[in-house]
Length: 71
Image 1: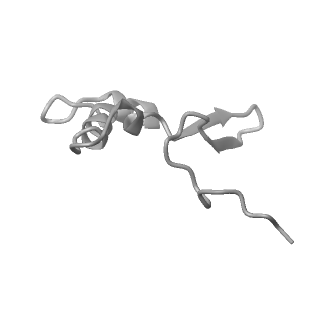
Image 2 (image 1 turned 120 degrees about the horizontal axis):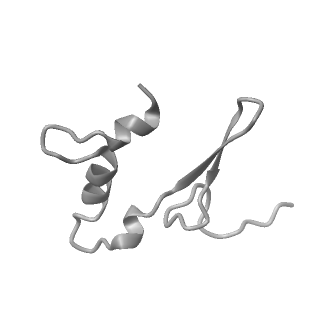
């Protein structure tokens, strides 16, 4: 079973994995649609390598909040 079909197949409640993720991330009182935006992008390369990057639209990003000067 491929990764994509797992996200498309509904569970016993009729929700796909993507729908459950969206529901969970927007359920909190102060959450909004941007909380459920994709946080990563993937790219399948011809050589079989999968590149994973932080999405430009990710509300939460790894690393420090502000730039730190290196010295």
